[in-house]
Image (cartoon, rainbow, N blue to C red; front, side, top):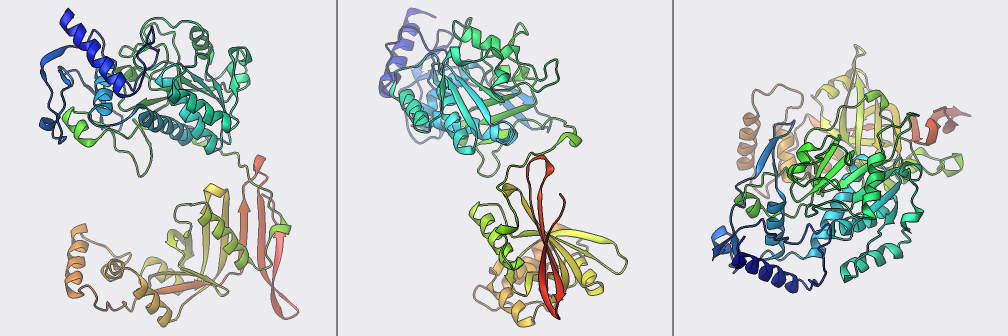
Length: 541
């Protein structure tokens, strides 16, 4: 690069750092600075100016055009046939420059989003019930900052994080993150506090040492820390599980584009790429690769051909590729729940159910009123499906459906059923059995007209369990009924649609506990002195 380009590089870098109130007085760049526009001698600048209004962003900038932005983007077909873009170090820096330049993101914003992405990715795979002791090893740059943010979120998620942060920076952003963790009483460990075998004290180690801007050979004390991470294996000679390694964006010590060149570097079990996966991620062979960040605006992704997977729902992370093949027989959960004994029970199981249902609502569980309904016809062949509980009173549990459906025909032949509620977030489920009757037509009528207009029309369209030739047939009939019953008009309830009520004769409350010693407390309706009464027994797990 000529002297002119070097001067331009220095000027742009200095202006950017000043604009973000970030000191540029350090003598050597921090090992990880992946949210800052690291403009190195390998970047080539054109003499013309870049107008962001021409890119469709609606504003202009005097930033110098960077050539070759998308020329070397590489795509990888994942196992589910979707294409994901992998970027070089230069391209990653340029994306960060745009994000923190004309798009208005700040370093602390991106760091918060990145750290939250790391924490949620870990929580997707490694549950706090089994991997509670988490060591976060933080470098002095932004990669370390991501680790500090992730530790805070993991603390709130129920993990027990510990921090090793040997080379602290005095910048306000980082000192603030340290203060936040100290306020939560998250321990900071010195190098002397760490065991040589990290597996002896920790279930999971987060490698947040070096980011994509690191070059060269790791220096003390990080060279020793990386050696300790390298020494971790999935299983040791005694077949005991060793600590899991989760690397943030780049496995520390890897070449950002060529990966683990000598084959003797860190072998992480999980890689959490940020913004877009870097080229070295193609060499990642661990079972869990996630992408986090969710802050790349769609216009940038489209303009620069960043083909990234869609994030599901409100999640801050998304898996890249298919999950690993696992031994289904080895899947198990060690439940940790409060004690649940007879002293905690209400005298009436309906009251006890309402108490647990309120707990499920308070916990924010998805569709806590979803229940598996099992029925069997005169041939004895059982069938199950999920329906939604729509009412509960002293007489029992109410749901609505089409009487001409498969379950409707089975209930007409054998008016008995079983219900199952599963609240996994609370380690609970409830089983209910008893006879079933249709509710009154007036009750069904009142509920039908309380539903949204779209649901009322949908109930008429759906001849439940009957064969439909094509999906567009349903849509066509729906449109015709929309026209027939304009907004505000009364939609008649179909005569074949209504509610059922199961009157419980048995209700069992199950709560998971350690070592499969689960709590099972069962109510059974018995006749005592000519009157019905509930008898409570404890069942073996």
